[in-house]
Length: 606
Ligand code: G6P
View 1 (cartoon, protein in one colour):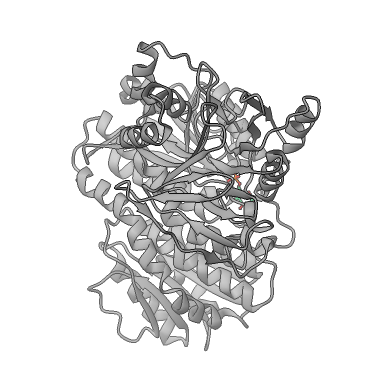
View 2 (cartoon, helix red, strand yellow):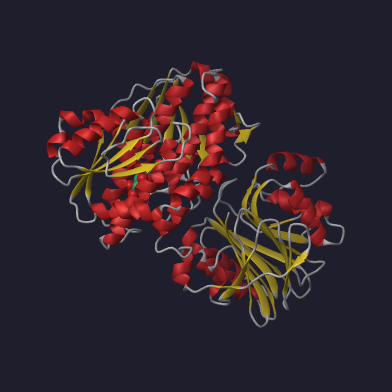
């Protein structure tokens, strides 16, 4: 996945393709490529690892010209960043070229089948199956071939296809991955996101899942999922490119908060089978060795440390393996008791955090089996760990982590279930838990509709210097992360406490008007937290409570009832309101939410 551009028109395609890719650079990428069909109907494909500048240099030396082309910037999901894995991908006879955003879930079986049919694969990507399938089903009509291929592939995709048999046409289709189309006087254009085309077209077409668009220099023809010719409405984009890069949101942080339903779906994609089994081929190599581990570690920094606290608890509960969570900067200097019977997880959005990296090296040296849970494919931590499982949060640009946190927890739930199933521990209802995981995106959409409520809670914090977050059990991880978000983006001192510890110190700080944000979602202990809340109310605190239905919350000024999901999943739901509280507090205080003072997105020094 990452950025797509496409052009067919009266002029050279390359300038549009490249400027569009540059406009999508903010999304992050690790390689770039273009295909141009020249006047001799030849498919010319150029790709370069690294920056778009590298691709431009390559193109300059080759004098590429042609009035139709497709372009791509890749953010690796399957296969490391490299020239070969970069898009576009071509068939073995160089007649078809494609670019793809998304994930083809069933690519492994399709690839096996295509290899048996004699197709040669050049890359490790899931995307390459699409171009060989198109080749296989192409009998002179690319529209028909594309229809056939989308009936076979499973997963998410935005796909642009060109064939040199018909060098004036681009075919585009999509499912669960966006694509935007536009027209100028003399050309048809496409981009995976609005910024790619906004300088050329202010009025755009948004495609729906299953539709096919046929682009020529003169017009764009749309077909619906039943292959009926349809007229689509042009939508006017009322904002400029800078706003468009943020998806129309005011900041990357807000955009990334809103992306969570989608990226959780992506992270779950292809990782569940028959509704009750977890599929994690990344761990299959240690499947039979799992009974030999007598201890596990979760090691990370910052937000990833908080998701680790959550994940460690879920692993202990489901798999029954004693699990320790430690901040990476402590682990590396604490002479941890780690040996070949230790399973050690290293969790990181960037995959580059220096302390986490050092901790990983130490654990490896001591003989542990190391597993990375990271977001950036090909990052240092993913390369050094014995095994890596990726979150599929996509590029996270705001410094304060949001979608990486929730997708990390989703991966940890899957890992815990995978290990528990391998150990034949069947006390938990996995079917119910998996159903719960699948229901998260829809519930999160509902929660996001209540943004105004959370904005109201943020108003309570706006003029505060301090605030207190409390929770027990898994809710403690949630309040740690909620408090960290407020500290990071709004510079308010937020103290997160285990609710039961209030009476051992912090309650001395509670006075008339103190703000307490409490999370009580775990049925066995929620009522205990609510008693602690009452103790703060008795001392004048103003409370915001996130809880589940059925508890006695009388006297609490602000109560938000979360949807009823499995208790091991509530932490994912409550993360979103807590992020929004931090976000709006920062907005009210005029803070730079995307780039908070003194913080860096990736901390590569100790
Ligand atoms: C920095 C970022 C945090 C992040 C932490 C760990 O401090 O500002 O948002 O949680 O690093 O980063 P990682 O990339 O390892 O998850």
